[in-house]
Length: 102
Image 1 (spheres, rainbow, N blue to C red):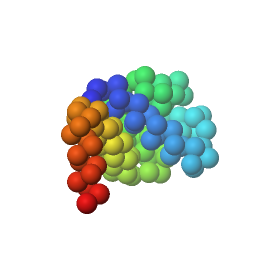
Image 2 (tube, rainbow, N blue to C red):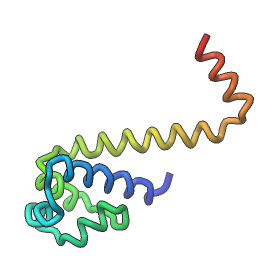
Image 3 (tube, rainbow, N blue to C red):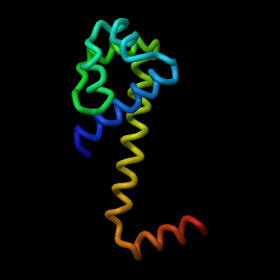
């Protein structure tokens, strides 16, 4: 798994949280005291967020940091599981499906 994937998932979680709360980038920017453009780049997975910046964004979103990290962790786990499945030979995968159904 690459850091790009992590950045993308983090951005997705932050964007979803902002939109669910009905907040604009401008409102989050003012609350977090971070430039609107930088938040936009984080949401698009183009920039890394430092721990301090992430804490500021979470405060502006009124969302615990642990919730953000839990959601990102879940997305990473799903991606890792999907990647692991593609590495299993087709015959072995078929046996797993048959065995799990039994």
